[in-house]
Image (cartoon, rainbow, N blue to C red; front, top):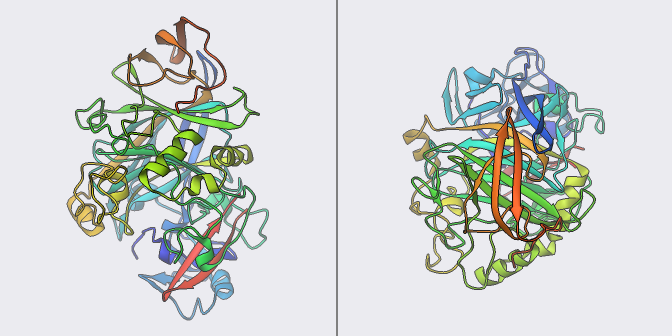
Length: 488
């Protein structure tokens, strides 16, 4: 059996129920993180991670017969969805040996290819509050900070850290047949149903951050092509924005900002800071701007400024997104699905932190690190997203040539604006933290926590400165089985 996420062939048994296997105990690896309520005041939280159920062994609940092998369901165990749900169980995970997933203190490492009795490719894990509940986040008027090492991620790989709208218990309470719930990493695919905030999608060549709003923040179902997204005949048929509004520095014209030896040097570990600012400067306000900073070698580096004519700015705002979609000639699903306001509504409902490493069988990750679409003129604004060749990223080649690739996420902090990072602001290149007019910013570290000290020529406003339940369905499409899970 090969442990791989294949969105076109996800076990549909968990649509109706999740039975629990008994062959391997499920022991969640610990992972600490911090909450910061003010500069210099951070508290360590003892969290855990859980492996996504799409990577787990699904077998007969009465034995060890695979319910699913290769691309085929066992016809005896799974003649239909309801029978399959009753007959099949999700097994516990040997995180390190089978999946190449290890933790140490506040650090999580995900290996790309792991060879044991079977071959495992990539992984996806969720942050938990306890053994039966996901850790829920509302990021309005807060910032999310983490360290990441992308130096070992070549073209075609995506080390992704994002927040997904999901049920705290994985739908266990809402659906009586769901016996596994969050404990066994109940997922929700398609990824863009009910909202997703891609804080970080990256390899050593390119990076992007992308909000995906949804019309709904409550649990919902869809069937077949009506779901939209990658595996539907109409990508834009669903209630959510499959494209989102991305900020990729290379795509926005700065080709020297991110990468090996560049301003943000991917040869070294970096700290990534993302601020979710509201129109009132309070948690009850409406999400109005998403800002990005990097910290490396003691320097706070503002996000690069777009050099694309007609698309000003270095942060994500509704105005930036409208301009970008117009100039790039892209469909403005972001606006159609409520923009930043609806992204903020998903935060109010609560979102789950997801960390993953994967290769892309749909588009070879060219949308991240190369020119895409490949038939378009690379000189056209918005087409070039990175320096990788359009022939790169083929999964079979990436797996054969870079099996030892890995990503490390560490030192996760969540808290008040400007409370989670330290360094000296690099002048130029973008607006300072939170907005306002800043002449000098010094962020110092004290006793393992962070303190921000700023002298300004004018008062920094709290209002940001604008730079310009688990369910599921089985759909039979083009002779294949597609399953989507949705969590609020």
